[in-house]
Image (tube, rainbow, N blue to C red; front, side):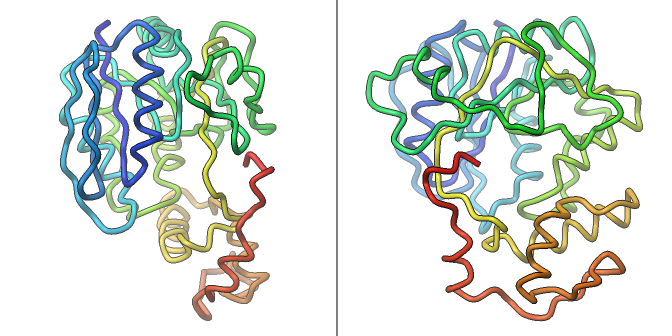
Length: 283
């Protein structure tokens, strides 16, 4: 299959191993590019397709820059970006590749969010499909491709495909978005402005492996504030407004943040601990 799967890894070697196992169970990609943001990644098993590990050690999570580094390592016309938390269903890479060959756009697939403890050795896709909970805001067709219009903000970068030429024409992810937050929404808004549609593919899914979740994500406080302001300056609307409202309720930023975000203080360790959602919550 002439597709490159691109993923980013920082200390989530067990998640990466399951992502690769999912790829093994389907039609293998031409290659898998793993951008290693952390240090000393674990060795990989023998796989029926080549894996290129791209060293990219950085503090924090430079998502835009790391994804662009993965694209630079890819040699195929079809790019499939998968977050390291995602296990692809057996037909996912083939399904995304067919969709992107038929229609130029950013093609997302549905994500099934797995509860804590759902994954065991010898996992079966049928169990993941039964346990994975879809995101309530994003509605996917049973099969085929639909255009998400006029809501480019529904694009998500957990699992999507794009033609390499289109990615390059859009300039990839904007690396001025530093760290975590809004870099994928910015890509979608720029794509929409350039006439590149945001598409939802029904059928094959990816399964999101559980990990601790924070609401609001105080561990990315500075990144979210900076990237939200950058996004607003470019597009005229505020992204991540639910998180920003959460910051304001805690007194971290001013209540009238829509007039311009002013930081009042940093979150405390106690506030960060209290923001962690219970493991029973998939998202």
